[in-house]
Image (cartoon, rainbow, N blue to C red; front, top):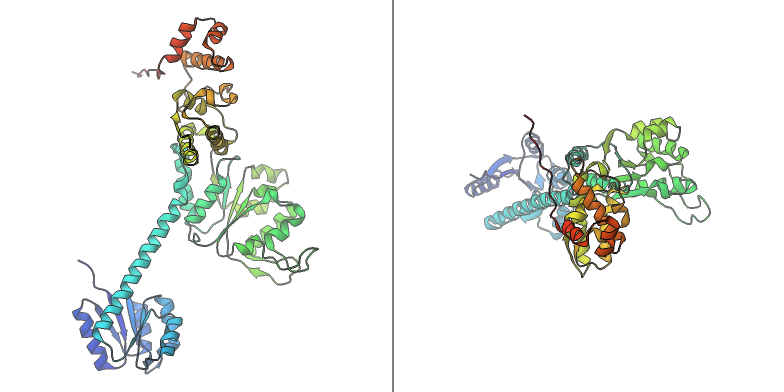
Length: 455
């Protein structure tokens, strides 16, 4: 059973108040009455209401004077009642936060329509807010493609951290997706509707770092023809990502620490600090603890940004994610490639999985995109992969199992075939077997080794 909507009726005219109460009660609303502003404030503090009907002329004050306070407590939930009915009054009431406006004497049908319309607006607003939250999540962690337990734990941790106001240090090798992680955290945080500004600390020249981060005033240096806000002020009320923070010069680290501690910046050539409300995310591919020991990174700044930490594992330590990621990037490539690739062969998957991926996810993405750009049609096979995959010395499958002799032999034959330009007669001669045997061995289906049960 749907609960009745609760309405606070603030009206000093007792007969009119009773008339409105009876009418709305008959139409399914629950009415709480108040004859003055003081009583109304008390009611609002004691209970929650779906809508407020506010008369502008009350014995202890002008409703217009307190309308902003009421609207702040109940945004888009105030319907004003007035006997003046002027356009100026209606416009002023709407500017002060009223959702709608009714003139006395109140038409019952119009009152009912106005209240139903206000409630429909509030429902649509709530649904829109829920949709934005879902979209924010889709724009965030749902962008990650993974199958490994290690990455699932990282994502779960990041989701929990996103809901906090704390500074987060995101660590990981180059190409693991640190910036994507920062974007996901921002989108799923309470600041998701506010701007996110990314700063690549490694790309800023030392002599420009302070002005880039904190801004400057006109005339601060040659060429400063106008004020510049700087990255921190641009990110006010939102999030700033300090990517590759380990590359910041020591003197800038000291000024950054002060900004984080005081929540204010001082632009170059300005004597007046400016307050900033920012959530800070930092990312690095360096071991900052080692950098602190080597005196290349300030210990106090490290402990300030290390409130929470997320360590993204390299791709080689979560090999079960390689094929899903490759298929994901292949799907993206097929959207823009008129010659669609149908899939990845089992032999190519095995080679992709055994490769160490020093460039991590970024290298995998570029590999798939390059194959797609070459105009391949059909299935990606070992012959379409760069030579470095065939020469890889990594011989472990996703579960860490050592390959069988048959698998090593097959890989070797595949490598010799490639080097011979896939001329079977020449490759068979190099391998010391007949061409028929080579054909037969390469045509044999791959088999997983049987697993013996321990008794």
